[in-house]
Image 1 (cartoon, helix red, strand yellow):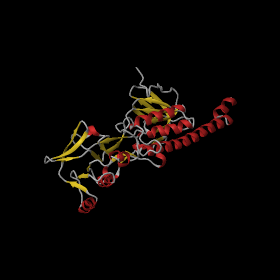
Image 2 (cartoon, one colour; image 1 turned 120 degrees about the vertical axis):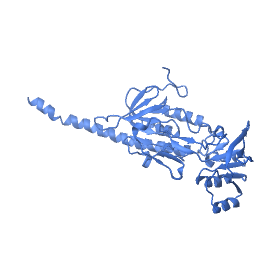
Image 3 (tube, one colour; image 1 turned 120 degrees about the horizontal axis):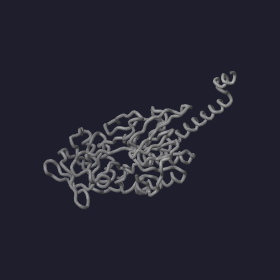
Length: 345
């Protein structure tokens, strides 16, 4: 069976137990892998090759790398991880489950890929990211990441001064409208059946935000992109950019065996993994970082979260190594009672 490569490099799964497997090759996963590899930990990144921000033309508000394409940013990240001995393996995880711990109680996990390859590891960093579910409006999805955006900090500058429409999806859309108003004077708020009290309508009016209560029927477009929003009464409101709040769901494929707790976010905007400080979880030996737990994190924050989780993983591994070494020394200095009995016969 042919082995898929990443960036044309064939990184095979090792046969030995590794210190850490990172599930997810985005900013959080690579940030964590880099931290682990620089501390001479054996680390394998499992990369499905489906980053959330693939449709975007550039990564923005990332100091020193603003405007870099998502593909180029990940290519550089993979190169840096490999430079320190880390492996980037292309594949999709179908199973991640705890194994019997080592004799010293050190956790063990087996990670299995869709092509039946597997690797055993001492620690796991889940950095699978999330999936965005768009509102079910005809004509909307094809423009995701281009004429349809969700974050004023990520894409706002690029759509400045354009006629923008806010497709409301909940209370969070109200703030969305006010943020995007900073970028354009031509903004329309489509309520789409959501509540908008009189106070908010007055506030919108003071900023020149036009409110339309008529239901949305479809998004219109041509070869240049979005051209407008057609309402159920037949009226077409000219727009070039639409902003939406997506339903954000942490990617959980193949992770059921870890039994990681999850929770809904306030405001009904999504569902992610529950973590403590530095990405710790209720499962010993497993950390979560990036959009899988912090659904609103931008690229820089996700990479930093991966690095922070990895630093704590490294500390945990160091303590485990010391404990194991102590057991060996004590065993050498204190023969077992079984050995004494044998010698006395």
